[in-house]
Length: 199
Image (tube, rainbow, N blue to C red; front, top):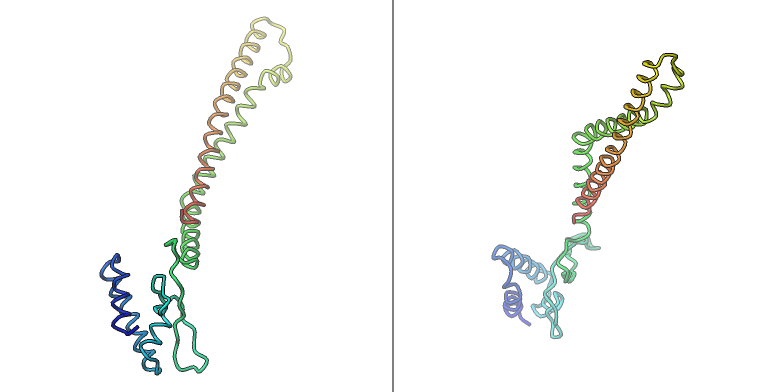
């Protein structure tokens, strides 16, 4: 296969790409042909080494990494078949994940941690208050004992029942609020993990 045939074949296979990408890929292969010709290789040897020999059945290969030569003169590219999945190389995904981790850590530390701690502390304080109110009838009876006069006894009984009922209602409301809060925190952590993984 001659150089002209190689480039005609390559141009046919790159038709679906945007014009700028096609020109870049064609320029890469042109440089490879020039460098290999400078090293004394024929057009047929170059085309065969790039994967366009007589038994060629897949897409043209693209350079992805370079290794220094053992003679120290120049760098020779190594070739790999493009993946059929169309995904990013592993190192790009790793870099993207690292950048996302750093950015999310900074955002969470600066903007999320303070409100998270404040809301958690308020919910914890409401839980303590609701438990104290719910058990207040016991504390009132144990603390002051049974009064001698009927009006004081009625005030103590109805006051403790009112505070206890308020505590029970607050407990029931807090159960729902805490469940919703825990659900939201789990969703936020899941979102962070998905962003770090790039999904």
